[in-house]
Image (cartoon, rainbow, N blue to C red; front, top):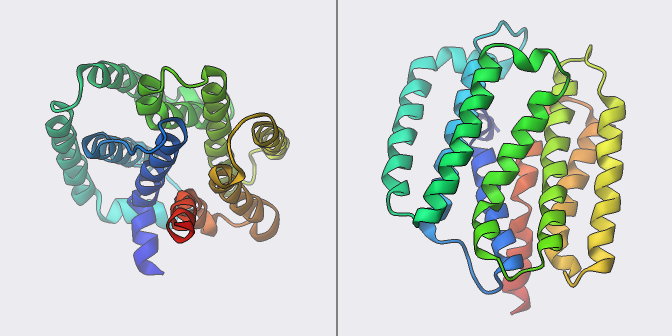
Length: 260
């Protein structure tokens, strides 16, 4: 359990979840393909940098009874070195990517820099859940980037719907654990609205598109795990389970292996 907690504190669970969903989305929109290894590595280290820096900034603020805060304070110098090392790796990997991916990656990087500036200067304190919405947008954009740029012949409407479905899934996670971490923050109605909208959208995609239920099950499994945390456990201590829930594409690939 301590090992998994450490992975969660270092945001490695977020990184793996992002890569798995990138693979699943590539399978959906580019059948028979996986994203190139360099593309997945670029995504992995970029997501890792973003989450490490995000938590580094957040943990400069006083937080009571937070194991995550204590972990980052205890290992602050190691985490700074880890961030620097990841940046060097990203630059090394990126130079071998196609030009169109580099250009679009730079645009996302500019958005991330603006996001960090807002975080440092306290802009997100002025509007409830704007930080969570911004994070979910950046996270979704990064994961869908390869598919967006390579599935031009796919159904654009379906691609947009799937992006919104995943955005709501990421937002559910972020709003849920923000509310569990801050009992004074009134976000129950927003969370219920996100969950209702997600269910309606998932059912619409299931019944009105060509996608099989097996391709959509990983999304549903991740969603249901967060529902369990929201309505049953109701504890921020299960945050690492909420991130591990994004490993759900593994079940699809396991099913694919078994069925063949």
